[in-house]
Image (cartoon, rainbow, N blue to C red; front, side, top):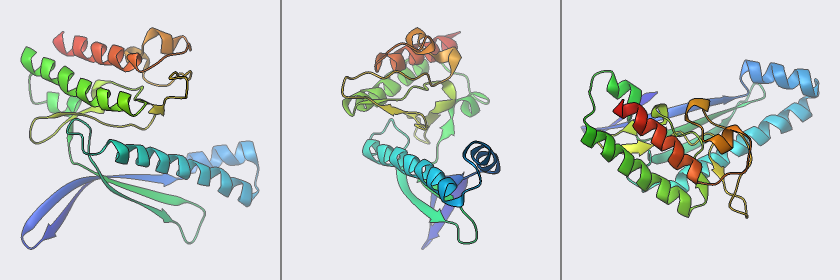
Length: 203
């Protein structure tokens, strides 16, 4: 959602992502596989919330880089009447690449700039041992100042001690072959996916 704060005549725009745990579908699936015990279900969903907060902490660790969508604040609200949580994440307001392309045409120079900007973001991720794993046009954004930014770290994975990961996540059309085949991989898979995005934009 787009939200606006007004203070002494000044306007501040942000984006807020709202995640409700559990959704009706999540609750139904968990109940079918774990049973009716409320304590078991509560513990299961609380672990999911903890994982989300872990992802938020990763966003926080990446904040301050001009080519990564900026994290601003978050809040975890436990529901009073029923089991569950609402997680609110306030972030920089940006436009997704597909939305931007609905009304703009890219020049070759802009495509090159996009590649450079996202490589800057991936360089920081690499220094922090993070693989994004879902580089695609829907996860690239543009700021009001025309900077290209990497966002949606929802399936990002921190590298293990060996510097490799081995789970298949991402979007198949942009996925590096080693990820698709379920083989071990490292941060180079993000460069591969970015190459597919650039190829798509140039064609």
